[in-house]
Image (tube, rainbow, N blue to C red; front, top):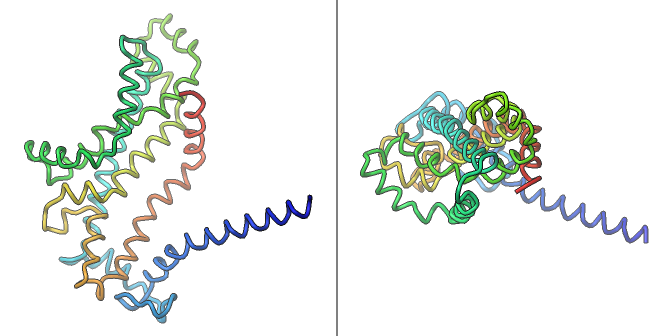
Amino acid sequence: MKTKKAVDMVVRHVFLALMALFWLIPIIWLVVTSFSAYPGIRTSHFFPEQWSFVNYQKLLFQPDTVCNFPAWFRNSMIIGFACCIISTLFVLMVSYAFSCMRFPSRKKLMSFSIILGMFPGVLSMIAIYFILKMFGISDSLVGLIVVYSAGSGLGFLICKGFFDTIPTSLRESAKLEGANEFTIFTQIVIPLSRPMIVYTVINSFLTPWMDFVMAKLMIRSKDPADWTVAVGLYNILQKTLLNNYFSVFCAGGVVVAIPISVLFVIMQKFYVEGITGGAVKG
């Protein structure tokens, strides 16, 4: 029995190692290609024959009419930080209302919100585009911020589960001292919810940072300075540009991954606590 268990464990670990290798190969190839001195696609060698930082230099310090990465990065950062603030406030306020307050039709409204959040956002893209076009903000950063932030409150479920774990006696004691709901929310619930706030902030940043479909639909400008990172890197992959910009595209992919990686490394502990804490109650 011990031998059979050992064999099963070895087989499972070998299988997982192979799966991890298949998953890592495209990422490794992207990184090594970004350091290639050859600007186009070269599939005859996995590792570059000549190594160089010229792609990063061209990406970051030599913007042109095709690749204006500094402007793309700036636009994506503006959208990401704005959505972080707005979406986090929306999620926290909705979660507090459903978890700590009692009002008529609370459960029905919560169930309706959960069902509504199950529908893919792509189903409403055309309607959203024409609505924002009527307001004149369809082809702008403001329009993208509105799109990414408007429905963020529907992602309240995990945060509500975390708020449910906060003792009710703390809120009741504050009410006896004369505190209103805003004071309880800002001075009692929020200071105790640091892991959940970190979790919400990370999710709020990742959505606009990595999204391509909505950004491509909303941004109609032909000026590369108006694009986001996702739209700009996608446009580099045109057939007429691949031979001159593919290695630059790979360098852009590496640079785009840096903020996300740093964010997760710094806040990993709080992120895990936020997920596990929000899973205690529903």
